[in-house]
View 1 (cartoon, rainbow, N blue to C red):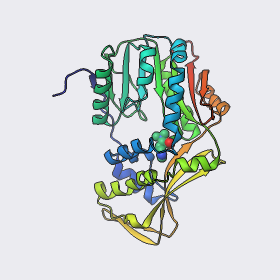
View 2: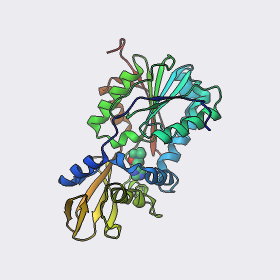
View 3: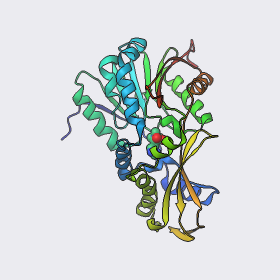
View 4: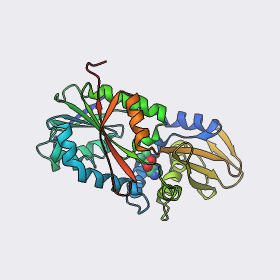
Length: 324
Ligand code: AVJ
């Protein structure tokens, strides 16, 4: 039995159509599959393992910055606000901020229903004073606050450099949508990974233990499991390259030989070396990101980095005087 310590709001997301999007992406040139499909149950566990890989500096560096700056962030944002976390299905990093921010309520929004419910219940159990409204929704399609959530100055939180999965144009659109969500004077605290040396980036996306490789290859296994595909994992390789001009790490699955794959009644022929592009992870300069934020109608009121300059946390404010 679960005790009802959270309010659970089913905002009925349109579930992403795995089958249709996979088949469409594999028919295109270059072939591609969107990174949101990494996160089935096994993929989510593999991602958690990535965050602990020694080469993947992202998670631990961001947590360190947040820990160091939690008080300063709370002083700028103020207490008693409504704290919104798009994609916050695991309610992990927000824990660092809760004591300082003392929000009137916390609203994690996520597409992954069970994951969200369990994590929200845990955070509510650990912070008994906190009102938690979990919103089951696909934030990439629609962001909305559950109707019974309390009102307070709004602050959105988007950690982990998840913004890196959008190309810069879509990143601007997303930040503008968050500006709308938090309203005039509202805040947005966002983690942004920084441009850096190629070798460091490529190691972070191709760790020695092969966890990231397993994460990438799991996409093919997921297609086999859920769509009855017959990918032979022996003949596929993980590749991560830093595309310096575009400022992004690209992940690909590379066909190790000429091969034919069947998914349902469709046949796909892959030549040796042909790839499926599975993820972009954009990296920014501090000024470059500030520029994106400005184009989206938000001003930067704080920027923090770690000592090595690997990662950054930006605090943005919606400068509009009235709601659009
Ligand atoms: C969850 C998108 C932030 O880009 O670093 C980690 C995903 N992919 N290793 C990232 C990821 C391979 C991660 N984000």
